[in-house]
Image (cartoon, rainbow, N blue to C red):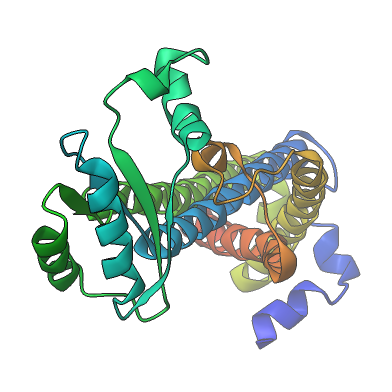
Length: 300
C-alpha cells in the first residue's frame, strides 16, 4: 500500500473537520457508489457466466458429432450397421450409439408435438458420436463412411458451434464493457459531488488559506472523505448484490438455452467480489483528487 493510500485510513481530526460529514454530497457519493457497485457485481457475473457457457459449449460440442443416414428403406439397416462398424474402428471415437425411436421423437416433439407417428415417416437414422479428448479426423471419417455407407453424412457441429461460442464471447465482452461504463459513471458522480462540496465550502477553504493551510492539505481532506464514502457505499452495494445473486436460481452451463438465463458465480469466483469495493474506492480517489486540484487551482 502506497503512502497516499496509507494516509486515507489514518485519522486526522483537523483535516476531517474541513469536510462536513453529512449533507447532499455525502448522500450522493454513498448512494452512487452503492448503486454502481451493485450493478458492477451483476456485470461481473454476466462476464463470468458467459465465459463459462462459451467454454462449456465449446468443449461439449467439440467432442460430439452426429451421423445421419438417409437411404432407401431396404438399405437403411445395412448402412446403419456398416456406419457403426466404421465408427467402432475409428481412432478418436470414444463411443457411437444409434438413437432409438423414442429419442428421435423427443427431438422432433418441440416442432411436431408429442403424437408424431415416427415409425411411419421416412425419418433418417441418427447415430450419436462421442469423441475422445484427442478427437478424430472428420475428413477421414467422412471418406470412410462414404465408402461403406453412401447414405451416411457426418455432422461435427462446426457450422453452428462457432456462432454459439462467438455469441457467448460477445456477452462476456458486453459484461466487461458494462464494468467500464460503471467505473466512468462512478468517477463522474464522485467528481460532481466533490466539486459541489468544494464550492459549498469556499469560505472555509478561504479561511484555511488565510491561516496558512496549503492546497495539498485541503485536497487531502476532501480526497480522504470521498474515498472512504465510496468504499463504504461500494461495500454495502456489493453485499446486497451478493445476497441477491446467491438467491437467484442456477441453470447448468450445458443445459441449452437455459444457460443464458443462469447468472451465477461459483467457487473461487466469489472472491472476485472482494475487489469491487477497493476498485470503487480507487476510482473515487482519482476522481476526487482531480476535482479538488482543479477547483483549488481555479479558486487561487
